[in-house]
Image (cartoon, rainbow, N blue to C red; front, side, top):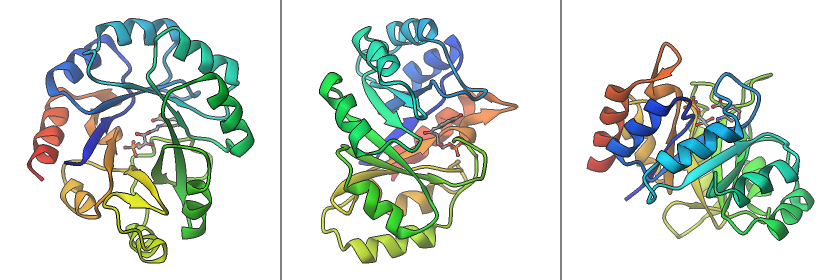
Length: 215
Ligand SMILES: O=C(O)c1ccccc1NCC(=O)[C@H](O)[C@H](O)COP(=O)(O)O
């Protein structure tokens, strides 16, 4: 069954919703966007969150010491790098933090995916490129690029690209999830698609989870 990550938990009620709908992972944003939460909020959220649901900290070119402190304080269980973090940065981070790492790729061409897969990370997350926007665009990228990547990579393992399990992200919502799921990723990542007027929407979270659990 494909994993589902519900990203951008911003309020205590979002954690209550997550505990009820039980995604496989949730995301806490630490990058400078409207979804950013503080380390103190992350601590509170992690304590309130079902112990079986890993919390993924999402960062953009962050100081390694900031990430390390959040891991060591038990605020996050996984790391998602959403900026221009290179192999050297990731190696230094991994020397200190013994948790799984996801590298986001804002897909404009297949070669970017191949290069990201060569990094010392556990998972890839394919997201939408939009100039000047760090993430959470609410827009899908051209999935033809993913179909092309699958042919070029020639992986035999389900859910992998160039040997790495990958999440499909970017503009997913109840209306396009079936098509997205059929592309065969390891996991699906939804943020804007479970929001109304910029806040997480319990009804949309239920709808998305029910759909994904049926595929
Ligand atoms: O969501 C954000 O605000 C964000 C900001 C900076 C870096 C990453 C961010 N989101 C990371 C995610 O994993 C999102 O779920 C992913 O970008 C998809 O978002 P959406 O298109 O809104 O579903």
